[in-house]
Length: 212
Image (cartoon, rainbow, N blue to C red):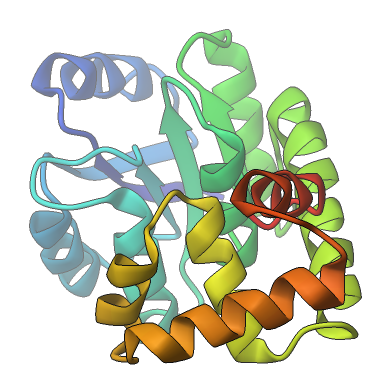
């Protein structure tokens, strides 16, 4: 089976390297190389590839946003992220979007080829080190959110997270379109429910629960 691929990466030199690599692999047809998300979308519409091989950093907008858009437009399209690095939040977002493969550019070429073959066959290939840490963070965050949901209202949780990111009461009021007095009342109630005394304690609580 020949695997048809559209590749999207902001670096033209890297795309040239992919062309040279795949030209030596009979099972892979690199249909188009793109430097922008918009060009990738057009190429996918035109060529109907099996796999989109994409960096999370493109010239016009984020590759994860492209993947999200395509999940509705091309639900059968498989996606492999090929990038320099993935932080925990990016990895979690990729997992939530249903990405089938994640490969770092520092990994051997043979592993990229194995990834594409496995994904094309309906499997998954995920970079274990990044995935392990991301799963741990995701589980901790979801467990923390469930715990907090039994104590705080949805609005109080939202305000707690904003406090924990360093916003002042006035900034929170403006962001949520609330009066300053209402924000102060919410924060007082949050302190009381969680048994904390100040913003530092509240921030530490939110961090411990993995909410920020």
